[in-house]
Length: 267
Image (spheres, rainbow, N blue to C red):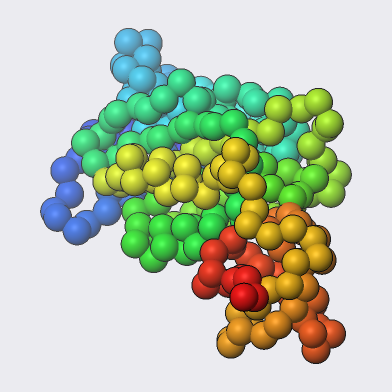
């Protein structure tokens, strides 16, 4: 986890400081990144100013835990095993982790976005979307995290990132339970976020359960492996991919998206 220490006597002016165009406000970024925020030097300011500063901090980062300190004195247990991205917290849908009540506008260009939807995503669509998002907006994404249900996978997918550093994966210790509602949840904090574009991008990764796949197991197809080669559909929704295909050459490949670019029928 990330711990940020702030000086209560001067933090608000730094958070509100107007920087020249193209220059980052490092104070805002440090607050946005944090999982724990130590509000130090509380002895130098009155209660009203502390409350005002807390309100300002929460407008930038609704997820971090605020801890008031004097001379940075704190119980070490508050800083150990923070588990800011613990899957247990996600599974429990802790509102401090993923506040899906909506958006929180604040420091002009810095905003947070949180949302959810029921259903599963296509992992290949998701990878393509994340790659484009990183290329276009990576420097403006202070922090992002979420939990995903991936079609064809029994395990939960959890991800987090800072700027262009993305980390995510499946955890075999946390499968979706048979009676558990599969849904996807996300939180983004950053500068000049295009909220509608991010929502739209994720929703386009969602699998339309009302629309069946074009092929079934046993169908003869052509698979694009740098060129189209003949093969046979072996399984549907295999490890997050719509198709697992055995080529006539004997090699097995995946059809990552159900479109002719990757898999087409033999006529």
